[in-house]
Length: 172
Image (cartoon, rainbow, N blue to C red):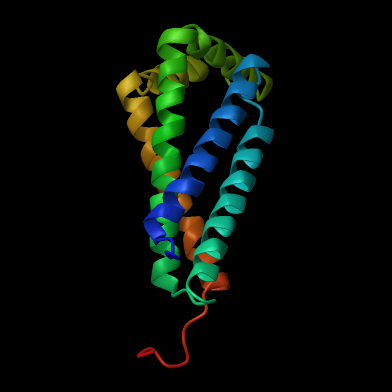
């Protein structure tokens, strides 16, 4: 029996791959103490684009070369949500259990960058005080999931518009 994979299965598969890739990127970032390095943000974005394209292409091929815009966006959103859940769970676990001092080191690196930009101590203290309010494990997890979902959804809008291929006769 030759079963066609569903969009949910494809999103789960590529969401798991993306989630594991985001975990690996985060782990390298934390271990090398490069939490404020923008290169990791670019690497994350490239990984998201690559896995969204791979997921949508697989779905399109499994349906005989057709994928509507809505199917692509839905698949991308689900794929991103799965990846966000995985990577956010890892980041929360890492920050709470493996290395609870990581947040403090990130704040110190941020302070150094803000000092290099010429901000006063008062401005830096105020900025760091505001950002510390959003560093609870629960908020970090929820923000990570929704952040990944929103970025994935925005990327999916563009990628699905490029990859989509509607049937000439929608009643076939």
